[in-house]
Image (cartoon, rainbow, N blue to C red; front, side):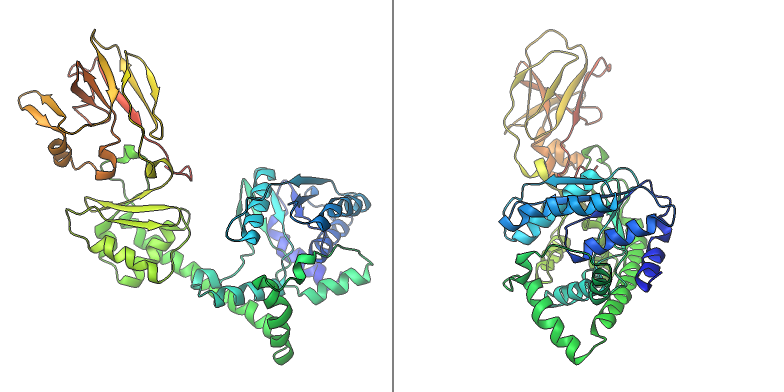
Length: 438
């Protein structure tokens, strides 16, 4: 076995029990070598079922012949191939849009615990580290590409990160492999191409071990990022506790537990919590966190981030995105008992039990609304919500029932959501965030 075979086997040793290995096959040098390595290994050892997937973006005419090349290669190696055609939605970065479409297709293709094997190598790792360094990334970003990460129902694994491109090229030449060349890789208007074609060769000419050393630095930074994540988990333990309004189904934190931390630990904990929810803000934008944290107790500050907003209410932080950022359309619906109503941009409500005879209407709070409370008389809803410390962002979304134009129930609020004898109740399931998080 060649050194490349040995390092590949070492990298995949922990994944031998996976139900399937699928190679992301572009048809280029790197993925062609990876597929050939695995196919040859499968002839000598018992491996999980091996397959390949090719994603066709339709962005350039040259790519139209790549599926045929991948079919020919896979047929020669007796490897099943699936070709997926994706639609790339143009955005600020065509590279990023294509990547998003590609990985969405990969994620949809993977079954439970299956592996997607990609062919990034040590030079790619050095390029990624340099690219992110020039963009001012922090420890998490400078840890570059991990060996593995979750993807859909399975895992993405990069088993060639310890191999150089020269080693892959030598392997391809030795085995007389053919591959396709992406003409866009020569376009130095793309930053990564400029780094790959101009900057890295100059660095390697002066420092031949540069790629190895940069990959080593990325590994050190990955370890540091793991330690920061462990510290964040400890700091989050006191903050990520259930609050009074769990039925809002929104990610939320107790602010006092974060406020007691040093500034760097606050940012570290928040980065850890926000990472699955939104892209991280740059250093200057973190001033929004200080404004949110230090605002007066009666204020309702908002920190706007890429995918949503962080709000503060009664010493808790709330993450809002998706329908929570859209004001719900006015609703004035005649209702009866045992009925469910879908609210535009505001989840759904249902009435449990049979309503007495009368003119019942479902809607939202209006200026001057009052509610008759036993032993307390008519109370203004605005003051009542203040007493109950309902988060300000939820007050105008709370569905309520009127009988003959008088508010008689507010959804989900104990003691206010229905008849005193429990014969009927108004329930609300709020909207979820874009990410489907509860």
